[in-house]
Length: 322
Image 1: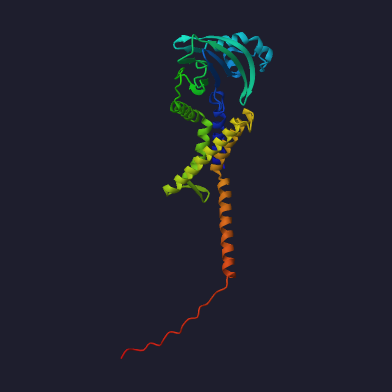
Image 2: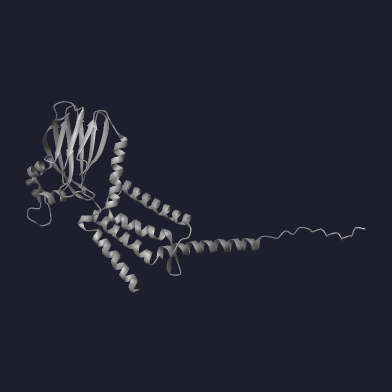
């Protein structure tokens, strides 16, 4: 019992540490949308108020709440700060950028400053260069998600401290490059998301073990362990994909605090289930019950089935050969 309590305390401590601001599940992102028509570019930049507050201190009276009045009084510093970390160039020539309006929008993880702007270039860009270095000095894990619509085509990119400049040639769409960028960011997201690692470890540990006689015993067959791992990883991936699709399509919208709490509870539940596998015992009981029920039904059917006896011929008497 002491070992159980001690292991549970360690797991809870790890989960609490993993939910600290440095290891938060929701990473810092901003969303930059650009639309190019001729030599003019119209843009919208969604930036989390929590990031701007960390960089500029939007909460003037320090009451823990950012009001519209405080935000409206800081429109000029916000615009200056954001545009100083964003550059647009057309064939090597800078495009003049000016602010159109400020808005506020609610995302799934909180309120966002919406900065709408326009840029005038010297001519229709053959090569458009986007320079982005916002918030990298304060949070190296920050990412800028960029979307460009030009000439009936859509280009996307993920900007990071290792890739602050994005060049787009007119008429060129590299789907492979886009896929590679998002694949790398997805792997990095999982690797830096310690809640993912903890949850997968808690799920995969029993995949190579079997609970017998109130203790874990290693599996002797590689095939069985491999099948267990494939089932767990596939189920985890499908569940993650389904929830992500439902959120993106707008079918569900839950507060980020609720999601973070649910993640913590799921990690703790999976870890405690390894110490005392109630789920596996319940599933095993269901399987045994189903097997016993099938056996009883088969036995009753055999008893009720009439027995057809075939007439047996009487064997001939053996006559020794003379």
